Structure formats: structure tokens, C-alpha cells
Image (cartoon, rainbow, N blue to C red; front, side, top):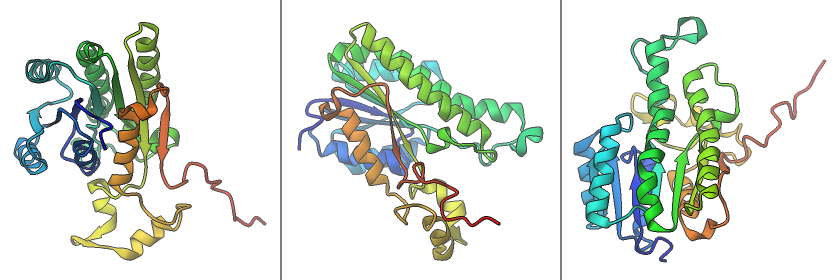
Length: 270
């Protein structure tokens, strides 16, 4: 169980369920260090402490170039190089003020906030980390996207647009690095209907799990259930490790078959 032996890993937005699931899995694969990062410092430090001595926490606002540079300096000084970058930090735009209420009434500042967090952050991460990634001699960037990038999302236009652009950015970074012989692979995973805190407003009623609502949604998924953070973590591990050494510039959809399903299948027409 040493798929990440002696590797240094940086995870952004690292207090969410998917990030923590991957961090825990990564720590079981023999790394030199797993660096969690985010803006909720108290929670981040608690998570790192709970995960053990090889886990560290750094404050990192992914929209700030200076934060990225300081984090790269920390990694260089303490671990020498960076082997794996997981760009996980993201927001959906729900709850932003001013709110995004349909096309006509969506506020430009809120649109820009989503783009900064979900797209600009990946660009900054790849740009600022490429030097340390190159120095490792064998590196992987794993971006966390969403199946929303592949379909229309009238309710979350900025989120879907940013995630769609993240796919293109992933491919461009992958080929840029390959053409220059950097030995850095870059891929993206596209999860959907994964049981994380993002689904709490939908699946919880007064703090309690709403089984009826869960089943209404789950029964529309071919595998008839939501995915688990641990299942996404395994896909990230695959892309981060040498198991995927001939894979770059591609995406893995993790959605229980939803993307493959014909939405008109089973319908009756007059």
C-alpha cells in the first residue's frame, strides 16, 4: 500500500468531505507529507491534527497569488518538492450576496466570485506550483470539477460555466506540460450526486436526513444511490499515483451512470 511513497501532496479546499476522504486515503499510501489548505484555519488545523503526524495545514486563499506563493515556499523549504496538487477548492454560488437569481437578475460581482474561486484558482495553482512539480521529476495535478460542466445548469450558471472551463484548462495544462517534457500529468474528475455538505440543504429537513427526498433523487440515478466521498477519493488516488502514468488531459465522470443515461428513456408519448 505505497502508491504515494515518499510523495508530497497539496490539497486545496481541504476541509470538505471529498478532500478529507482523499487525505485519509493518501496517508495510507506512504507519502512524505499531505498538506491540507483552506481558509477555515481552526477546522483545518483540527483536521490535520486528527489525521496524524504526516499531515500539515496551511492557510491558502486560492484566489490570492501571494497565498499560493507562500504555500509553495513552505513546501519547498520543508519537503523539497511537490509531487501531487489536488485543486479541490470550489463554491457553487449559493448564498452569495447579492444573490444570483436567474439570468436577468444575476449580479456580476457574484458571478465573478464563482469564477475566481472555481476557475481562476486552478489557473493560479497550476501556474504557481509548476516549478515545484517539475522538480519532483514525476508529478500529477488532479482538478476537481463537476458533472455540471457537461450539462445545462440554469440554476447555477456561473458554477457550470467555471467547471466547464476547468475541463478545457486541464487539457491545455496537460498538453503544455507534455510538450515541454515536464513529466507533469494533469487530469480532472467530475463528481455528481456525492453525499457531501453541498447536498445538506436538499436532503436535510430541520437537520435530519429526509429519506423520501433522498429516494426521489437516488431513484433517478442508474445505480439507485448517491455516491460516497470515499469513492471519489479512490479516483483521485488513481490519477495521483503511477497507476495512471499514461493518462493525461482527460476527465473521469463519477456519477453512478447519470451522464450515460438517456433522459427520454421510458417516456411515453401521445
